[in-house]
Image 1 (cartoon, rainbow, N blue to C red):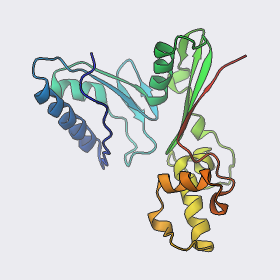
Image 2: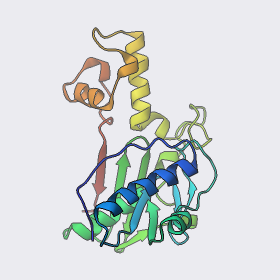
Image 3: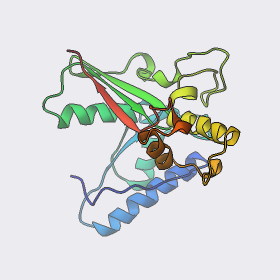
Length: 218
């Protein structure tokens, strides 16, 4: 069962240990509020995840580049059951379980600080070789492009993710200053608001909104 209300909490973890400590601290706060309830964890993380072992293999947006045994380490620390999967896979599962009209075949695309996707084929999650299916954000579209957090160059994320579009907007605002707007304080909400209003400074940035797209065959 789920407990408590939905909350959003930003965790800026510089190391895997800091991330695990933050997650454990969050769990303990809820445990104190519901001492008679068993509270297990289901975690969705970006990048390549092994859902069997619960290990985060690659997490491109994180400061570290080594695998992290998140499931094992949290279970040892908290004495509960932990389930770990890719965040886009969890979005697809939520669509599959909560939307009775969902087709047996569809794709979820998540455009945020990165770009990811998950495929449901014949009513099952398609994980691909080494559980790497869906990492469309790291498809190289320009071999001579800028460096990506994954270590390669010219990935889709470097031009079309929310982070990339904010960088492009800051460059434009510095080249052509907008009265009352400081490029360094540009927020996601400001960028989306300007896009919705059709602001000239953000023309062509229609993909900046944080969106999840469900593509279904017809």
